[in-house]
Length: 437
Image 1 (cartoon, rainbow, N blue to C red):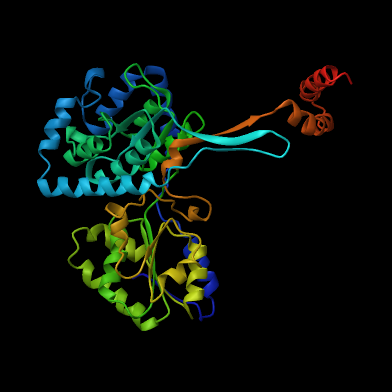
Image 2 (cartoon, one colour):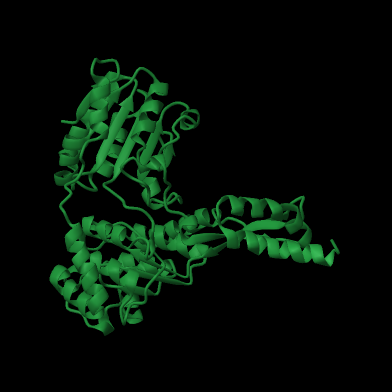
């Protein structure tokens, strides 16, 4: 059974804090193993990647077969049923249209002293996109990672997608094709992250690595950060639904299970201002679990980490939501727009009963790579901005330097950085000489 909480009960605050601090996944000490894998890849390159792929994925490769050939990709794409191809093409179109609107503009201006200031945006040169393989193979994640990078203008995009026992998902390869990615390596795990970060004889290093993965992938991304950029360290999926009683309990039950079926460590929470409705949703979840294909995963998730919270009103619901800072937040209330203005910490918002979170996973347009584990308090989901760099620009005229240079010299002197001050003073002295002062 999930946890049932009521904000009016004694002890609610302590129980709510316990919910927030709940350990939601096993955390084996993988860091030492990952450190060894990274060191091996750095030392032996292709040979290490090939050996580790044979060990973990039961797939024997050579440097020449690390990547899918164009013919292999084309043949796999031919296997995709027409309806699935059309759905993936529509998703790619909508995701691209959304992310195009995110592109920032360069800007510059001249200030009153005559200095030209501003900034300009430029893409990273190369990005590596990690796509989970095997049972957790998600073509939608290819679109969500690759399309923003392509829109940002990244010149070289590569994908690492493990293929256990040599079995590739044709939809993943189609998604790569639709996203403009030509190079797809059939490798995964920490060794793939290390190869993308440091490079091998066959695999060129990249500047940024994005995409979800298991604990070993997450640990590897954490370790290579600094050598390359990363998007985030993602944890198990989360959904929070805030709902009033004017909803179908079964709809919300399915919404809660849509995240629970991802992972036994996923978390699904309902906050409502009607206790009877909360119980009805919990009963609907139990009924749905009897027939859900992935009930062996969703059941433990709901049992161990699920929660139904009854609150006094929707203002209190918003306050609790901000403390939870969920990855996904559904607002199934009469006026979701008004409530959304009070829910400031969430990875993605879904407004109204007709907007299930699953729309965001596939076809809505916004990115589904989102902050988890309460990190929505300080971070955002993946976007074109993750593949861009902002460079500031400054240009002084003689007049501008004369106007503001003395203050820079003073501040340099106050910090005991003599050369800093002298670099300004030398120019000011030249200006004074030319002016005959």
